[in-house]
Length: 158
Image 1 (cartoon, rainbow, N blue to C red):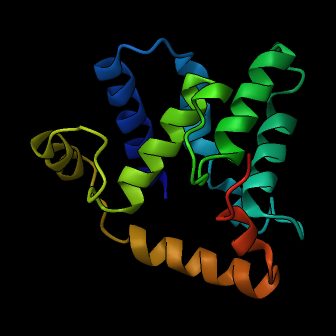
Image 2: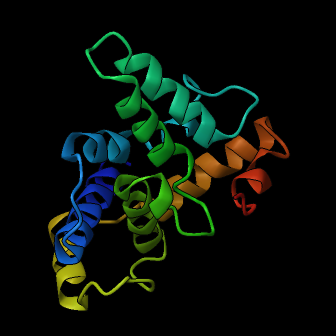
Image 3: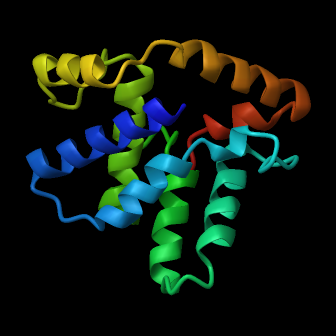
């Protein structure tokens, strides 16, 4: 999963650079590393894993000098990374995390304009081997332990 998180960050950063979007790089980095943390038992509750990941990130960084607006931006980037609709209105970091994770889990079938050679090079440098199996295992556990939460993640919200 750490490779998935690293690739997600690099994809989001590349999308920002190519789109000339200003981003808070530290928020983007923290969001990339924590966006799936709610899948792990230590962070899990009976809520959706994206909300659990948000709470974990906020608990971890509260008291570390982060203003409330940054914590909200980080939380939104984690909680809304599976949204079906664009999230630009929540902040560049939120939409870029959504796009980067979609590029990553689609195994680059969805590219948002990123060149295939750039994506192939990234996957050669940071191997995706085992990612699909690990995410599948974690999602299966979440479905068993928190029935009904996964469909709520993939339901369009305004």
